[in-house]
Structures are given as C-alpha cells and as structure tokens.
Length: 66
Image (cartoon, rainbow, N blue to C red; front, side, top):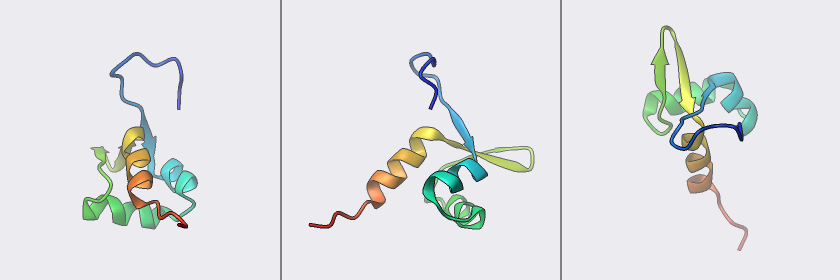
C-alpha cells in the first residue's frame, strides 16, 4: 500500500501478508489461490498476490448488515 508507486505499477503481496489482512490462515489463502478465486502469480515455489486482487475479493465478498 505504497503511495509512491507510478500509475499502472502493480504491487504484490505474499500469502502471509494477505492472510494477515484478511485475518485468515495462510492455508485459506492457498485454497483461494488454487481454486482460482484469488488470482496470483507463482514465483519459484511461492505465490504473490496483486494488491488490487485482494481489495476486489474483499469488496465482492462483503455482506452488508442491511
């Protein structure tokens, strides 16, 4: 969530960072990635998730209390 990024520049997060933001386990994030619900890029043996994908996922999953 860096404010010094250039327009169009993508910021990636680790699975651990995504899990901390979503307040779930890393295994839950891995399940979301493997099912295709949360897009990710594989780098070596690890995954990186675009920051905007986490925001979109949370916005789509939000259930209002109306």
